Image (cartoon, rainbow, N blue to C red; front, side):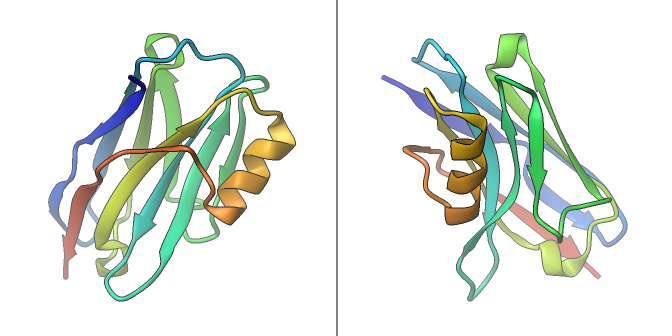
Length: 129
C-alpha cells in the first residue's frame, strides 16, 4: 500500500533551522510529483514547495522562497525540506504529499490547488520567539 511518512519536526528558536524528511513507499514511481504543505494555526492548508521528477522542476510558495529548499535522495523516494531562518509564523503542522503519472504542468497545478492523492500524517514544527 502506498504511503508517505514525515519526520524531523520539532521545536526551534526563531532564526534557527530544521530539516524535515518524507519517505515514500509502496509505489513504483513514474513521473511523480512530491510536495510539502503546512497548516498554520487557524488557517487553511497551504503549499510550501514541490518537485516534479521528470524535469526536477521545483515550485515554491512566496513564504518559502529564499529560506526553504527541497531535495531528493534514495532514487527519489525521499523528499527533504530544509528550513532556514525560521520565524514564529512558520509554526504549524507540515505534511508531505505525493502523486504520480503526472506532467510537469499537472504537478504545478496540483500544488497550487492542494490536490494530491497521497498524504502523510504530518509533523509538528514549533518556532519560538
